[in-house]
Figure 1 (cartoon, rainbow, N blue to C red):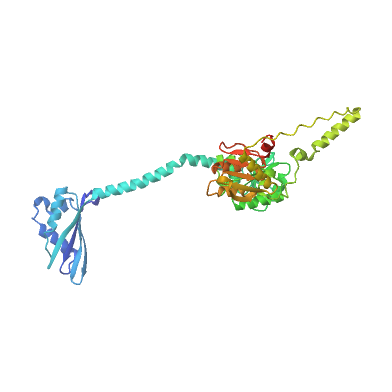
Figure 2 (tube, rainbow, N blue to C red; figure 1 turned 180 degrees about the vertical axis):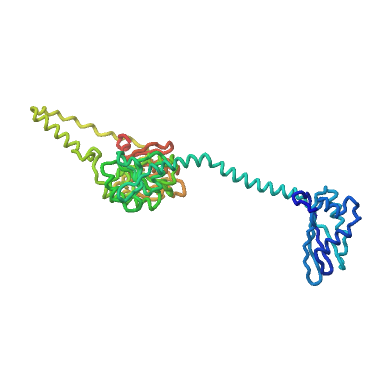
Length: 434
């Protein structure tokens, strides 16, 4: 009767060495013959094998140069004591066939332990796979539905088949981005009046679409985004500029970061003054002058005045209003007065000065490079004086760099004034509002 390998609990491994050439049947015969009657009737190998309490004896022999070496493997379903006695009985075999031999037990392995280890390792793999699949179920469902809606909402607009949102024609405002991924990201945030230029050359469709709409250019915060923006400035009408944070792309922004960039968009005139770029495309007048191509406010006023003359005599001329008194200059602390003197020194030069301790000049740079210079500061700075408009982005950088004082020509549209930054403009020098 052959032992079922799955029923074995232990496995005896022994090394055999013989001074001569031997084969497997010689080894098996010697083991059975020389242990017969040695271990008692209860541990007789033949009876144990017939009852299935030990399995088939496996022998692997290699004979070289008149010597033979190999391994004996015996599976056992006996208990620990009986298996240990059987293993020690193997070492009493000292002759195999005509050759002297020696058998040495290497190990008695508990097969259940190795099986248990395999079970544990396999269970780890199964559990890890199960957790990985379960972890993304909720997110995957939400993301799958969101992406399906985005794909349904995105359209191909114009003869160039540009990626765009569904509200392009109906909306009064337009957001122009670089590529399809940017459009998808804005759609995910619920912004549907968006179109992509798909390259550095602005398509004619986008140029035509920008007429009569409030247009915001929203580009990546890298060199390529700057080049695309400059192309837009030269070929189409823009009202506002929004940029992704430096080194980031619009398609990578989270909803919070994306909406913050759009809230902090800069009017085109202020952006041009800050950067020193030229705009040959922004030739539009005020919004009320270009909506529907109608007459200007002055023309409409003249038309209404002409109607009154036809109906009767013109009203008597009004007495001229007295001119308001000039603002009274206010006394400034000596430190601020020095800063305003520096501001007068850089007037109409579009340059900025970064001051350190004791008002030492750390850097003097063009206004368009001022923010980059502040970001790259390696040491502390005390104040910034520049011939330009104080923007939200500049104040955010000043707050981040712990620069307590900013002096500029005038204050732009700032949504949130930093708590630790004092801002002064020429209006403060004249005593007027900032």
